[in-house]
Length: 124
Image 1 (cartoon, rainbow, N blue to C red):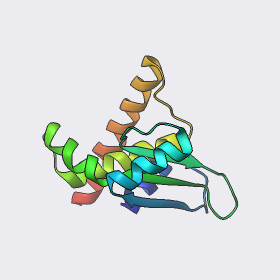
Image 2 (cartoon, rainbow, N blue to C red):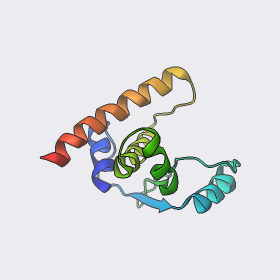
Image 3 (cartoon, rainbow, N blue to C red):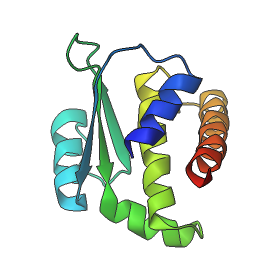
């Protein structure tokens, strides 16, 4: 999991010598935090909080229950779906967003690039 974030960091110029915290949560807890911090009680896949502090650059919070469900819908394994969420969160920390169609297209292209290269690295 950390390798997915590191690879995203390398490809898209993340700052060196920084820490990103990865947090895996069930859907109930993830949704509770989504409501608390983003004022939206609905379930979501991943949240990313960028701090840019000296000791903690940011956090990526992943909904593992959603990853398991969505993996079946997208005909991929749950680990691949989980890695995609981590990559998505890392891209958010690096300034990508998906709020409009153009930005979403850029993020999807970046996700594909990272996932394709990551699969090559993991299989080597």
